[in-house]
Length: 89
Image (cartoon, rainbow, N blue to C red; front, side):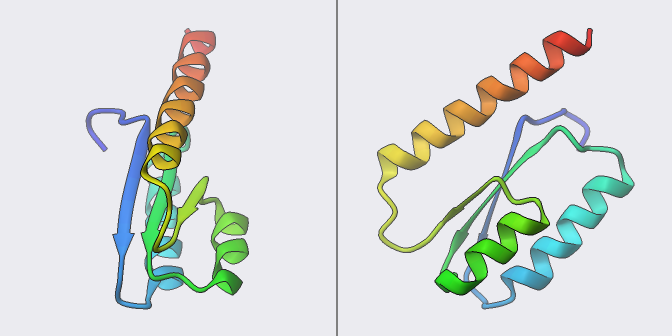
């Protein structure tokens, strides 16, 4: 990711969220983009939310998620990124 984005959001509606997110996280690690916060949304069964979080996803949004909660999460994770990058300088 050339622009050092603080947050990466993925929308997965295919049912392949575990496979896709595992690969995305693998690629982020390979290219040393470890500070990026990862969000995923889509039709994700409750049973898979914990698996996604365990592999490194910072937030999971399922159908019916409150838009204000999503916005608050993006703001919070972006602010955490700013704090991390400032302290690293």
